[in-house]
Length: 188
Image 1: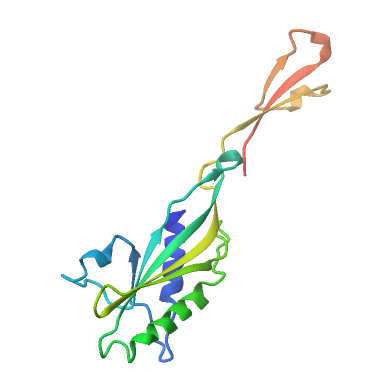
Image 2: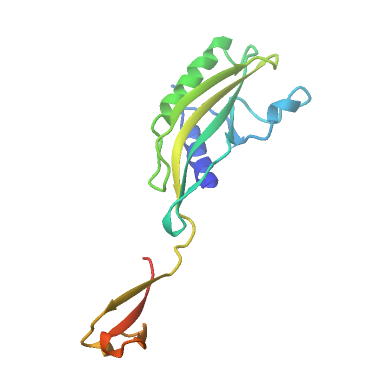
């Protein structure tokens, strides 16, 4: 499910274009504390967005389905040096554009609408600005194959011969009570 989320967000971020038709976000990747060693090297173009998944507390439903409300943190990195931004405050316009594009982003593959819930401006990196935008969404993961469900039906059947590929057995306790049928049901 995280892979689906990552791909959905990345695709949406790369679809943001400016008035000249140029792609606004230059780099998208998984967050891995990239800002920790940024003073030594900046191996990515800016504006860059790094996607971080917070802890996921799954709630299991029937048949292998699980769901969770998840927080996704976007680490938005911009360069405030002359020639990269006209004014360092323009980064807030970028954050608004990202929010507009992610607002209510969802997928029919079990990903609910995105909602911005928290914003942090981190000013520890000289010419680079690091803003953290937290989005919340609800996800449903049905990637586990549904197990075979055995259903026991008790009743009287007139034409047992027409029930093929199923297991049948006779009620040994009281043979006059009828026939018990064990049906193997497979999901679509």
